[in-house]
Image 1 (spheres, one colour):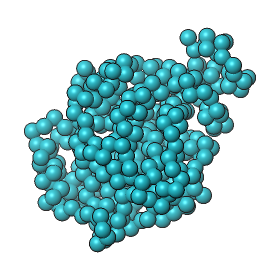
Image 2: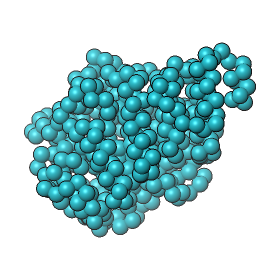
Image 3: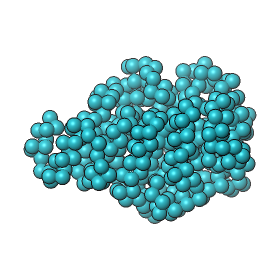
Image 4: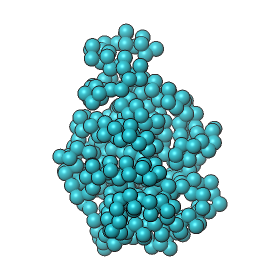
Length: 370
């Protein structure tokens, strides 16, 4: 079918070469990756779906999870962020250990498999505080997988504890940390990064933290914040650095393109890219990241409808039940202000898209097929 499309379509010689490489599952160069953004969206969808089918057949993954966001108090002031607050600033929160454990305890005797813990970079909390939190959560929920702390949070809490990066990650692993999420990557290009998150960890630090995590046996996710002041080359350069690291470690579970949302932040004047651009970003990610098995659409950010459509553009994962336990995107103006989906709703969303729902754990072991 794809070869017939090449014959019937109106493509440049360069585009034909790229399509042929994709069909043959050959790696694209950075320049070829940039050129993907010039393709018609429909063709990108066909190509991304072709590759996704090879990797995942018609399966679409989800998990049963909840979020804990201990605090939005943060030492950094990123221009794209609608979430962070300073101590005593209106809208700030700082949950006590008792508050956090009460929330975790509410999931006792349920079939939830993952807790996702991220928050602001609090000036007074080091890895031992957060390690104790993990240990106490696991005392309550012994079988839960703890996916916690962005590289930016890890960088600060480990330095605050005056230990090396590897020592700090091993200590957190001993406390019960199982994997780390992909947040904090934003965009790797230094000049763009200076404008959107100049205070936080550099791209090199983010990559080093994830590489070290993989080295000590902590898998992780990868992300990119798109749709602000970056350009197409910045996006592909970002994907290329992730692809290079995955070549070395094979430690990334999935890649998650995260859309910039405009509400309540210093970059609001930019607006947001449209849904067509979102779908193109997913398709390009699937095509370029040949060594990533999974591409995730984070439905609380995109909305349920767009997440469903993304399943035809190379996406094979739509995250989990969430259970109205995250504020990061709702504070930035996400469509779903109270993000929660039941298992049945997730299953129906996937089946309606013509796909096969598969419940997974955090590292993509199959829990149940529907």
